[in-house]
Length: 164
Image (cartoon, rainbow, N blue to C red):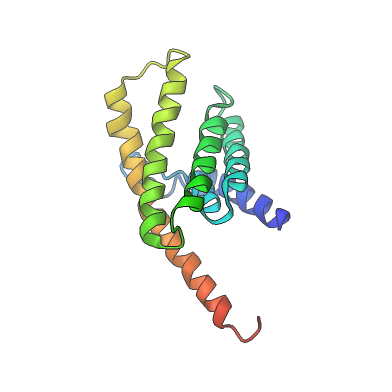
């Protein structure tokens, strides 16, 4: 089970560097590791969400260079929040998972912006929200909806499979 999570997180990090630039629309790329973090947090709880968010965030920080730890911290917080939401909400419904993903993507971008402002990041709040955070939240929502649909189809197939 742990090996599966590790391979999934490594695959998400690799997908972010190789597939996400190809999926870029209008200069906005999806955050595939964040999608994985939220879905893992919703399905497995706050501990798994927090640890997976920290791991993929740290991989993104190291791969991108610059301020190491910003994405690790924000993705860990988002994974933990997703896990806490899974204890309080009926998260098996896609009608909860996808809006939750959009909201948590927005919250992660906002938190990362404020964290970088502590280190005098030279961008205005309005520009970052309009050109980066909001489009990425919507894009993650669309990709997350496709991922939730695929996961639901796989789970249904596994339950009805005669080889269980």
